[in-house]
Length: 350
Ligand SMILES: [Zn+2]
Ligand SMILES: [Zn+2]
Image 1 (cartoon, protein in one colour):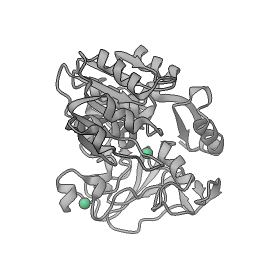
Image 2 (image 1 turned 30 degrees about the vertical axis):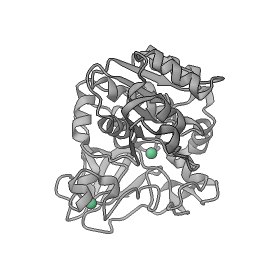
Image 3 (image 1 turned 90 degrees about the vertical axis):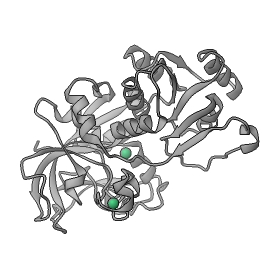
């Protein structure tokens, strides 16, 4: 089968690889019907994810049809349409029992990182009973494509932010994760959603789709000027909750500056550089920081919202490519060509 493999030094190639086989009783083999490229794939390509193994098939955001299951898989059978979680987790360890599946003692982020991922025709999924979310009839592959990764990240970030009805929520970054964050935040009935991004087209999209109420472009403004603009929009207080989904060189500082005292600041972004936490400057602000990698759990609830038409990620899809043209898809995605947000990759046979 064809598979997109990286070498750990910034190079990717579409290679011929053997079709994966079951290795453990809890494994399943999935025929990929749609996959996509995530910014984390670019981080891996650039060598910014130390745990990522070279010579691995990239990709961890996909949907497909169950092709084969091991004897220990009880909830799914061949033929089932499934969205696959970007994280592998056992469901039984200390962390899983608390919903912190990102830190599963027996899993974590494996697919497309330490084991072969989904930018291929088939993929082996470990602990399949936990990894899969059944796609209901009436929900298309594309509707469910982002469930296991960026939509899960938006959902998780909003859960961590503990948004109260009527409150103000600032989301830094109006890219794919920023937009899924805003659409999930909207379901919590905030008073206003403030989107911040240096890209005017992305900001405009967030407002035009009703995901943000106020758009702030920090280009050419100092951190204190951005802080003042957010205060102006929030009765002089700052945002009640801040979700940082940009991961830029100055967006961590922006996140704590625009938060009101006693706010929760959620860091969903993945950085390529260390960030500084200037505690003397923050003293008295009494902030709560929540950081990390998505705990992609509770996705049955999220797919039900998709099926009910309450979450719609179709605005994220910019371009579609067959798997044969995935190198071109990477180029367009990385270059943000024509404001490319997300690409859909379709293996030839589906
Ligand atoms: Zn991802
Ligand atoms: Zn676990």
